[in-house]
Image (cartoon, rainbow, N blue to C red; front, side, top):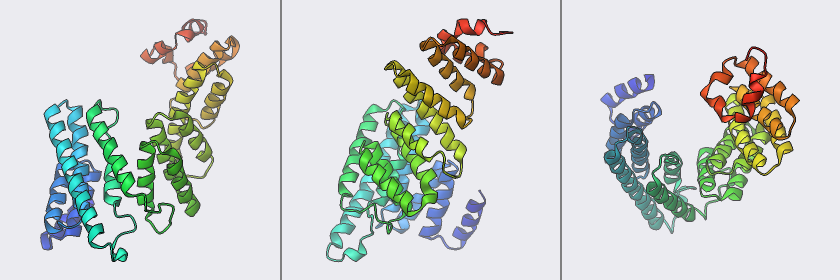
Length: 328
């Protein structure tokens, strides 16, 4: 908000492309998408030959897709999606034209010319909204952009870190896991302080793509590093671990599932009582009622109302056990 005030004062003196983009970015970060859109459009009028305003307009459009989907406004969802795709295409055309015009002067072409589109696509995550046809279109666009960036060496430290992370995220969404992991590992090799944000982003994308097992192992690998916002990584470890363990249990690999729950609990996640319930249920599946009772008792000691909550109904195997606890 303070940045917006300062940018507004500066724009009143000199309405420049850079200031409009900066104020638009500030609006976007506080989810004021319509004012952000207006600034990006004004910036676009001043600089029609660069792709960034077009891609940023597209990003705003897709943020408004999500917003209107929540409000069940199907017509506006279609409108904003179409506008997003339109501006994506405009950005793509400008980049293609720039590359074509400078084919004999490669020094004038950025190291990662499609970076604005890659960034836009990483922001355009509409998975889980039930918009299957739109998801399909975005997947096709993702593969198209990836194919156009094959000549770029994203392992090179000369390319901006954020650009490399965005590209690796896009590769993960396209299920090109090995290529993505190679980039993430090179980023960490270049700067070990990025192990937390880089690998956490990778794990989140793996999880969203349905690869819970790999997500869990990546998070397990980084959890012992001294990383900022470690609680976020712990929560993601819990989510990925619980889902992976559930798959293991279905395949009668109970010992491996037990080990995962125990490791997650070592890091003291939020709402750990529900991880303890998973652990107790797994012990019941292995006919170890004593350990199951112990873990359920520990869960109840953390949350005395646990067995009265709706979520506890998901553990029918623990119902009888719970009734046997003191003061249940």
